[in-house]
Length: 181
Image 1 (cartoon, rainbow, N blue to C red):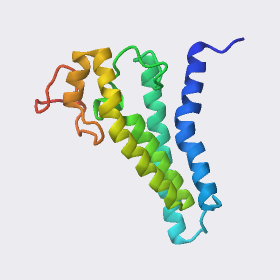
Image 2 (tube, rainbow, N blue to C red):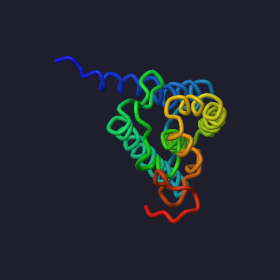
Image 3 (cartoon, helix red, strand yellow):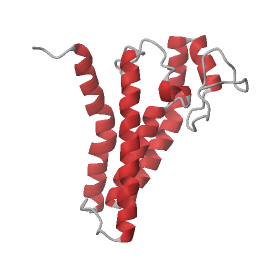
């Protein structure tokens, strides 16, 4: 039986986007820096790094799965630019922050850096974040304004790009009004 088109699109989106950022680039960095990728000794400090990494990985993977599910069910697309959502997704974590997918990737990169004690991977995470700090306002957001118009403008005016708001935003309500989650 052939794969459904949405499954192919998601596989491609996962392999190309997070696969590159989370696997390919870190593998090259580890190879170039000579870090062998072995876990730390089971000392008290090693356990701290391990459990911190496990927490970041679980949070990042869970958030990514939630976001991808929302993009499929509500957005009718994928997070990939070649198959973007047809509907603006303003649900779940997107009611608190505009870019939870990037936050999930940063959490997973932090997990890799902590688990392997590879500060070069932490530097890669910082570079990735700074690149997105430029990309989103210059490219992504103007494209979203073109696709979704006033709906996106209202969303952008009320939901922060990187730091999640405490209370979930509801469409049609301006910042500062009484809102319930």
